[in-house]
Length: 276
Ligand SMILES: *[C@@H]1O[C@H](CO)[C@@H](O)[C@H](O)[C@H]1NC(C)=O
Ligand SMILES: *[C@@H]1O[C@H](CO)[C@@H](O)[C@H](O)[C@H]1NC(C)=O
Ligand SMILES: *[C@@H]1O[C@H](CO)[C@@H](O)[C@H](O)[C@H]1NC(C)=O
Ligand SMILES: *[C@@H]1O[C@H](CO)[C@@H](O)[C@H](O)[C@H]1NC(C)=O
Image (cartoon, rainbow, N blue to C red; front, side, top):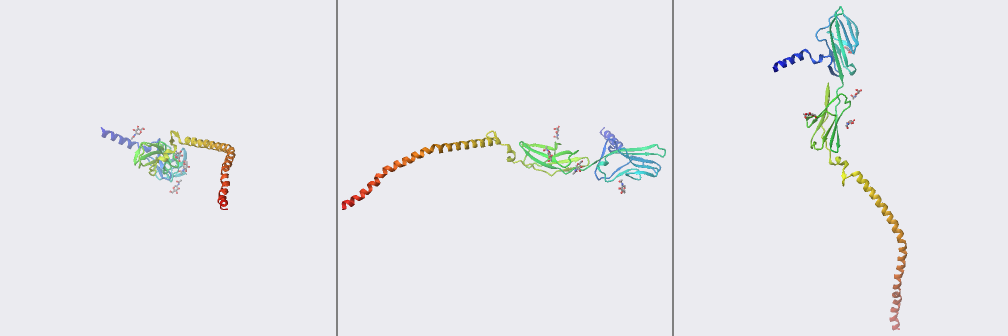
């Protein structure tokens, strides 16, 4: 049963090779060489051969006479495209008629010319509750992004991968891969490190946002400064009358000292007088 199924699949694939369907594009890198052939029949000297690209005639041969050759055709009638560029994408159709103008065979092929993807880099942005990894490259259009964590494929296909703090362990490495139909390139591994100071940019102090705490503290400081200035002015005003009073008190204090000085010469004179 299984063998039968595989053989049926085998026959199907053999009979209808995927590249031969009109709907499926053959993807090629810019600069490649592409040959588009007829499935079976080869063109003969007495046949007519025509090739078109997006309905525009690019090659016409009637018998042995080449009427138009914007593109090269091999001896067997295959279209040869060398150093292909993006503008050469599109539908190519080849038709062979016999000498009487009867259709012998035709082939249609869609060609998609792509630029190889650029090498991406992983940008690390530490955020409050983890880290954002941003897979970037020039021209990230029509590319598929995949992520690797510690060398294992991660189940993520977005350009930006968010890793929460709880998921991120020290030493974890990340890389992303960009791919299109013709190429793939991986970024160098990054080891995101978000230190506590990075994360605490918006730290809370006494349950208040640090910024608001600063505003309140500096506001309070300003208020205290104004109070201090008011006090200084008050003190200087109130002290002036006190100074005069103090001077008077000083004079009063000097008075009682006077008699001592006055008495002193008397005391000194006493022995002199008694001596005399
Ligand atoms: C045709 O082939 C010749 C020789 O290989 C080459 O020099 C020429 O550029 C080709 N022409 C085109 C339109 O590809
Ligand atoms: C990812 O990085 C690219 C390039 O610096 C930038 O344009 C884009 O906005 C970033 N995406 C996010 C979600 O930060
Ligand atoms: C990016 O894409 C644009 C448009 O497809 C193209 O003109 C340009 O050359 C590309 N740049 C690079 C570096 O691939
Ligand atoms: C990947 O994610 C999808 C949806 O988020 C889930 O259904 C699937 O089981 C995941 N696969 C693996 C291998 O984790």
